[in-house]
Length: 181
Image 1: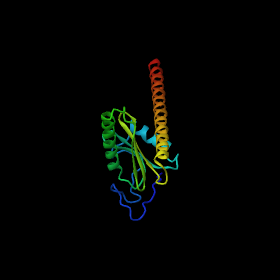
Image 2: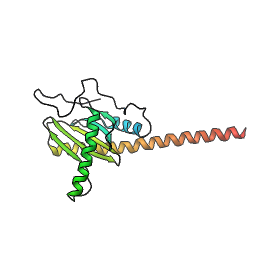
Image 3: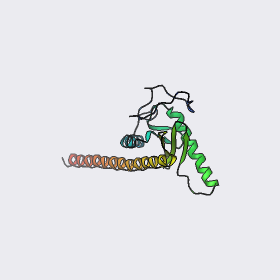
Image 4: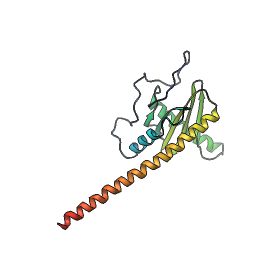
């Protein structure tokens, strides 16, 4: 489910890289996933691959933990930690520059783009963009990915709430039926 582009010969990577095939799937750290992590994983799966200019995404917590990933050839734990640092610096920078709340941190490299966006108060989205585009096109593609992720997160949460209510309603009916006997 990854869209990573290969590095051209002679380029040096700024971050440690995993060997091909060793990238983790869209699952959180070693613990079993539940609740918010399930919602995030489902939402990321829902929006991945929708834009040819975006070749990967990663969702991280604001404290630097990788929550879900759809990318290869990047060290996801390091990128998650750096995304949290970038978001923190961006918040401080925009505050000191008196330009309002930070909405994004975007970087252009020789092999493409990377952007860090707050999804909600404790969640960040990292978007990786193709190299053969402009910063403006990357901005549009990344913000579209952010919007799709936010909408998908909301849909996933609504579905989970509905399922929980259905289970509670069925349990209550079973309890009432058992008491009536």
